[in-house]
Each structure stands twice: as structure tokens, then as C-alpha cells.
Image (cartoon, rainbow, N blue to C red; front, side, top):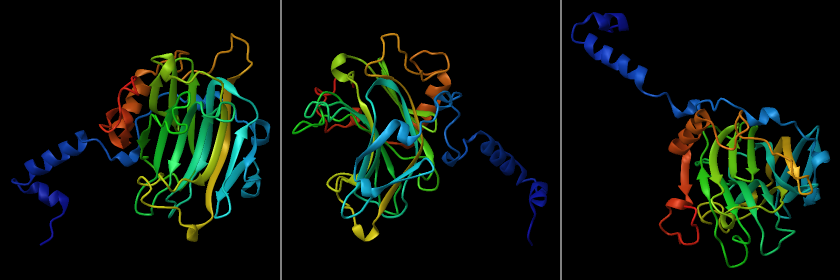
Length: 307
């Protein structure tokens, strides 16, 4: 005999069990697939879109770059990758782009959007990174955020400040917005307006203050990108493609007057996140943070005093 749900409830010994189950389903949080709680504020909504040719130019690999109706495609094959750069340097601001990543085997490949002054200060540069570390088809992409200060990523010195995340969505299925907000007191990384990391200024020695340009690129980093170099770029799967659109920049240029104020992370114009934004950020960290340099026992913590 097959009993329907109402029939089951009619059995005295089943009713308490089902009632307990129903209560549990009401209090247990729903699947992570639903995504983070709303941050309650969208910094990107206050920043206008910038046409690529108005704010950027090709930096290298021009034959591996295509602009079509405001959307930029760059790709890597055995002959070359490609990169672009902003037309001017900035001393603070909001910098964002919508990106769509390539599915399948992308091990060893980096698709990035970042700030840097490495051309202006070779061997002694600053950098703020959003980097997607390529992967194998059975594993998700890793989004790596990083901060370098005054040459900490140059030459024989490598003092990265990496925090790595998986995402609550598939970044190959559609465009999603990724952004860096850099002001004199903090750096905040956003994914679809959800703050995922806040890096506060605790001292001048651990915070980038010199003007930087905005960059994006796709390149072969087989030596370290995927599981510390275990999996390399396989050019049987070429080309590896990165897609960008909806570029957003609201920033103080390097020669802006002193009163220039960069955008705020919160609706109140303050530098700190609202409680609702902090709740969303903590949700991401609790569910999707996969590496935090401050908690790595192999790191020399005398080199990262901000931890």
C-alpha cells in the first residue's frame, strides 16, 4: 500500500515525526546556492559606465583583443595572451567591470582585473588584484584577491596578502560584476555589489598610497596558478577567452585637486561598511573563503604585521 502525505499524517506515530521535520525545515538555513544575504546597498549603482575606448587602451597582444559594441574579448593561445590599461592613473576610487569566464579546462590561466603602478615603479610597485585562477572541469574557479605594497611582489621578495574564494554561482554562465574600492582608509573587494573582503589601512607600510592604473589581462601562469602549478595550461583547449563589459570608474586622478573625494562603500558616505553589508561579507567568508594569508602557519608573520 502506498500512503499519501495526508494519509501518513493520519497515523498517530507519524504525526509527531512529520511535525518535527517540518519545524526543522523552517529553521535550517536554505542552500548556499541561493547566495548571500542582500548587502542593502549597491555602490555600482552610483557609478556610470565608461566606454572602453574612453577609459582604456590595449597594452599588449592587440591581435588577441576584440571590441564589439562595448564588450571586450581577450584571449590566450600558444602565441600570446593580451592585456589592457587605463588611459590615466588614479590615486583612489571605484573600479569595476562585468566579466564572464571560459568553462572547461582552464588550468594555468589567469584572467584578471587589477590596479598597479608596476610600469611607473619597476621593482618597487604597488598592486591590488582580482584574479581568477584557472581550473580543471571538475573543480570551481578560485577568485584570488591580493594586495602588494612597495615591491612586496617583486624580484626575490614575495609578500602577498592573498585571500581566495570560491563563488556562489558559476562565473562561466553569465557576466557578473567585480570591483575594487580603494580610498585612503581601506580597500574593499566586491562581487555583484556584495563586499567579500575589507583590507583596512593600519599603517603606511602596509597600505598602497601611490597612484595606480587599471589593468586587465589573460596570461599563462602555469608555474603557480592552479594548485600551486600541479596543473598546467593545455593548449589543446585554446583559445582561452576572457570577456569584459560594463566598465565602471569613479575615481580621483593622480592630478586631482585635494578636495577630490572617492566614492563610498556605504550609502552614508562613510568609509566603513554598514551592518547589513558586514553581514553579507561575513556570510561569504563563512561559506566560500578557501584561503586567508593571515591564518597560514607557513607564512612569516613578521612580514605581515597587519594580521
